Length: 188
Image 1: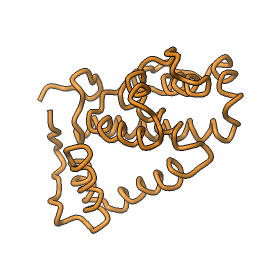
Image 2: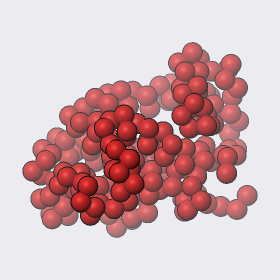
Image 3: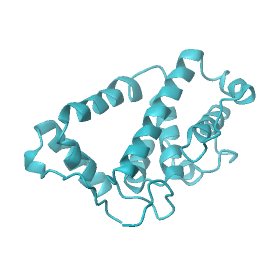
């Protein structure tokens, strides 16, 4: 179901040139640009979100492949159809295969390396649908051979921003949801 936000989406022509590029990319890869069109009301906030991606997600200490893996785990579990469309493409660009994508909900699958398996477990702890999530000593011990404390902090902050954005996108009805999405599902 296409989003039906209460906030008015701006037409593409009303967006600044950078947002028009984001709008076009969203349409090409995800089939919808409601989020970008609504964000046109506050382009400085949209720019801040882009800076998060430039500086932390695509920058930072943790290889992008790991962040793409964790982001896809969050979006598939949360049920963001808009996110899943683009995140699958980005994950493939980062080197994940079709077999990896098929196993994203199964951290125990033998396709995953020990580092990837531990990261998928960490992402599972950060899910909005897991209110009792916790970085246990056992999970930390599985992550520690692959990630130092700075990387683990970066991963936690990155996953927190992504999960928070998912909640915002669902509550404000700015993205298409998967049929199984439980977040922000209210009768119209």
